[in-house]
Amino acid sequence: MLKRTILKSMILFQWLYEGPKPVTVKSGSAQIAMVQEIYLPEHLSAARVKVFHEQRRVIDRISPNYQVAVVFHKDFEKPALRYFSDATGDYHRLTLDFQGYLEMLLEARATFRWQEFFVDDPPYPLSNEDAQAFRLSLTSIIPRRRHLEFQITERSVARGGRCHDASQ
Image (cartoon, rainbow, N blue to C red):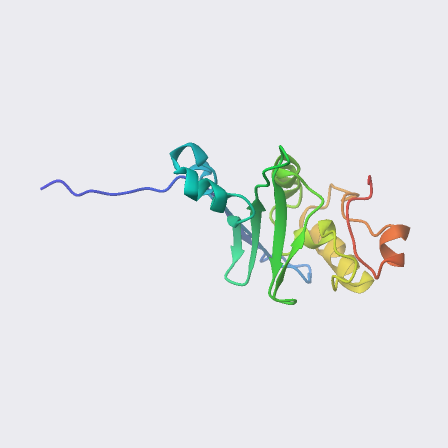
């Protein structure tokens, strides 16, 4: 008898820090969806293409309560990324495009809630203390890096403490 197994292609990246140093962030996780799950408009009927745009499609299931979705717009070539946070119960625009998202995912080693540094929403609740604890954890786990990507800028502090890429 032939047993049939269906495999879904995706990127799965998970880890748990069990080292001797006390850290705030102790895990990382990313489950990047297959391209077919988020983008196959050529297989849609004309009526469904209208629904295709402006809908969120999950591309990274970080945890049951946190995820990143992509939104395609008819008038823009590049899709927008949205970060869902259980803390706010809502989606928030990210400053990263898809390529930038994957690069930062690797840079942060998928550390839990790294995306919050790139939320483009002034009232988003990321404090200086939380940002500092994140950087200290990342430095303890990956000591040879300076993690300059995860900085709070003067502009972000003026907007309520939001953090994002220091190069912007």
